[in-house]
Length: 114
Figure 1: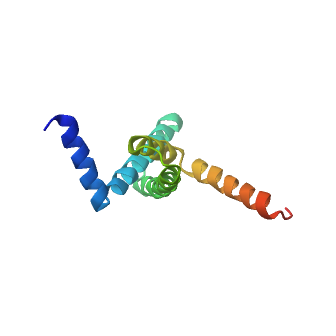
Figure 2: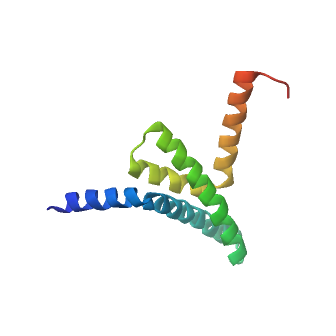
Figure 3: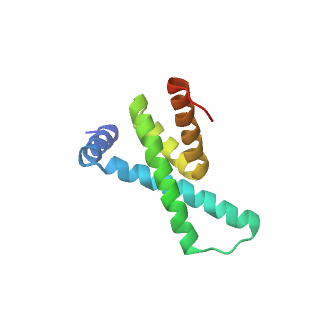
């Protein structure tokens, strides 16, 4: 059994027990952490655990949204993880983009006022 086959079997096992979602949340939180640390460096702000936890909540939600969109589009698992990480880094901006897209689609389909 070569290394690629072992990795494939491990990935299949993780998929079977649902740990791929754990990885996706981890990538999203990692992206959120990177975003938070960049903001601290840029603005010379103090590190606050409560703010980091809030960033993780927003990043995790953005990552799960991205994951479901990628799953729906049939994208590769590795691309899905990358997109989850980027959407986690974007955090609220990604959620706002999805909100705007959903609102636009609802308006397109059903019309309506402002």
